[in-house]
Amino acid sequence: MCLLVFSYKQHPAYDLIIAANRDESYSRPTRAAQFWDDFPEVLAGKDLKAGGTWMGVTKEGAFSAITNFRDSRLQKENPPSRGHLVLDYLKHPVDSNTYLKEVDGKADQYLGFNLLAGTVNQLGYYSNQQKKIRQLEPGLYGLSNHLLDTPWPKVVTAKKSLEKAVRNESISEQALFELLANERQASETDLPDTGIPKELEKVVSPIFIKSGRYGTRCSTILLIDKNGKVVFEERRFKAGTLEIDEASRFEFEVDRDSSR
Image 1: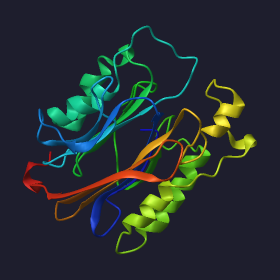
Image 2: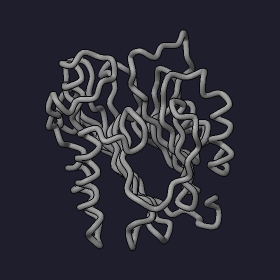
Image 3: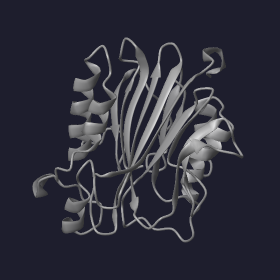
Image 4: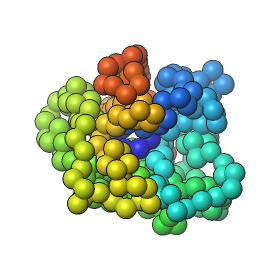
């Protein structure tokens, strides 16, 4: 996951509204979002190379997602896959503060990451580049490949679009997907410095990335309303295009008493 914007406990009908893009090498093998055979409570896509996931939700309403912290100057030899930090939480969801403390104890093993984990009742954020657990207050947030709410151009643009969308009493799923389809590149003066060449920094600056070998593989929206109804919709794209290759949609109700 490389861009995620979300509204938490701001909307009169929805406790959580998430719009997210996963950017990855086109050649990396991936399975579409589904309920997992070995963990039937977990709804998520799967990274078939390392076995983890980038974003998912459970039938009990536990949620987790991860983004990489991009800095080419940070290197580790044979680090574990960050996608298992998401999967481990979804497999055995506990109090988010407890889980993030556990992650903090082993965070130095991993390359840079940002992790969200919790439920609509308690949503936590942690980055191993900051080493601080934060329980989020109601608000609108944006996350890319730096710390939460770092004002990269794509984050600022996506948050403004989400803010406009959540002003409406009825949330338009199509508007959320349109938000995620923005291909506009940032100006050179606004590009961050993450240790990669400026021409590459510009290529990966849009909300929706298209390039020869790497780009946006899928867009996902997740809605959890105040009655516990979950909507999870994923659109997967043909490499290097906005053409939808496959799409899947899931709806279910969670037991609000089971949400931690």
